[in-house]
Amino acid sequence: MIKNYSFQKNEFIVIKEKGKVSQVALSEVSHIETKSGLSIINKINNEKIFISKNLKSLEIECNLKNKALIRINRNEIINFAYIKEVSFINKNLTLFNGRKFTITRRNIKNIKELFIQKK
Image (cartoon, rainbow, N blue to C red; front, side):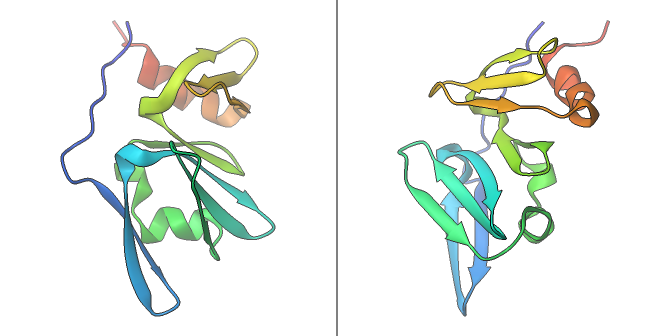
């Protein structure tokens, strides 16, 4: 059975960087990735926000674990609401925009628990 997920009203990621604070609505974030020490927040409208923090720092500072964001590997965090399908055999997932991601063995169990209700 697939669990339904809906965003809480006014749920945001607050970003503090270079002397300013900004916020991004969680409902607009499809995934967050890291490249060359930068975190990149990818929005559903294909806009990208670059932050000079690694994913671990961003997770802690923005308290991402209590939100609808799931760490799937060392380089990527996915918004649960935008997952179209998950292949537990191939250890990958696809977002509604068609982008595919690899899930590490370590994280596959957590994702499986989110999708399948235990009896």
